[in-house]
Image (cartoon, rainbow, N blue to C red; front, side):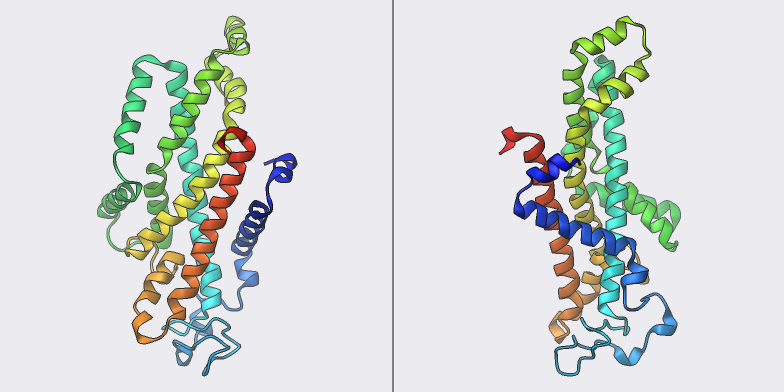
Length: 294
């Protein structure tokens, strides 16, 4: 993202960019920003269980947004949960982009049978909803690793499940852009000079197809966070001991009808603001990169 692209963004898109930057920084420096460490059992007081927000009767300014059923500070949980959701979404989007770019470039350069096989696999994948594929991959992975595993394994499973459900868009977009570049004179000249195919693809074609990859990466980041939140809400994501925003919403959902609405509301609002901001930013980048989409 260049300074010129930022200058062309509208007020709404710039506001969304600021919000995304705030979420990114808070995720990166969560241990420094969060009032408490929600994973430190010594700092948790069970007497603070389900304490309401500070401005409500019975609230305490030590817990501005209240506390969950275990007495953990909800603001700290949201900051750490955002960190988990953002990290998983970012890694998943990067893995999906890497897989899609490699397959898209391979299909465009080799053509023929290789192109047909890769694109037919992409077509089959497109016929299934992303969340269904993520649930399938997540379920199969847990069969092999067992029901009990560490947080690191859970994160790896989520990244695998989400990235395998999102690579197709990258592959199809990169393939279409690469086919245009392959017909250009500079690629033909490089081939005549005897440059290796890998050099031509990586040094000449790839840099000219990065613009749509950037836009797709931004939009797929939001989709990856949504799928992670959905899996966690369904109980197939991170454990409650290391929650993401989806896990916090699932935990809080059980207290909605008993009056402790804040346990679910604040994580849900945080998730919604994050997703909407990323989508607005992605749409803005798409309009800047491709004025015909306006």
